Amino acid sequence: MTQPPESGSDNPNEQPIPDSSSSGDEQGLPAATPQWPSSPSGPGETGSAGDPGYSVQPSQPEYPPYPPYQPPPAYGPAPKTSNNAVAGLVLSIVSWVFCPIIPAIIALVFASKARREILASNGWVTGTGLVTSAKIVAWINIGFWAAVTIIWIFILVIALITGAINTS
Image 1 (tube, rainbow, N blue to C red):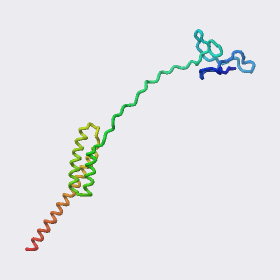
Image 2 (spheres, rainbow, N blue to C red; image 1 turned 120 degrees about the vertical axis):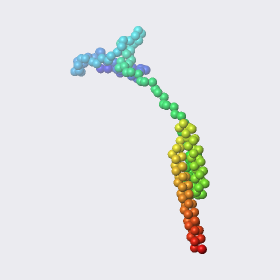
Image 3 (spheres, one colour; image 1 turned 135 degrees about the horizontal axis):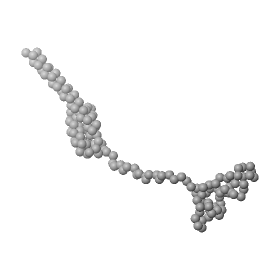
């Protein structure tokens, strides 16, 4: 039989103390009662209920200590996208809708300026895809309008030649 811990105990982890006054023969139980491991108390220490050999905490297996806590890595500011690259892409797209040649040429200027800015930043400024897109769209626009202009000039020259031949 075990005794409950004292009501004024400060330690909530206290284990009940086996009662040596009752024997297991009275209730038909084996005479052997479990004994908890305990370390002998030092001078002047008494365990619960005055038992000199009572330890407040039972012995526990020794585990290796946890490794020291590692703080998370310090992150710097995130790379930013080049404003010149964005402006170049927007102007190259606008060149298809409005005044075709001038915005395309300005887009090429912004794209080359953004490319230099990105290369000089050592990875802190991004936007190489925007620069490439702006150059492709601007050059296609310039090429398209150059082809349209050449075709109109060719048609005009043919019309002038055939008109000159018909009048003679």
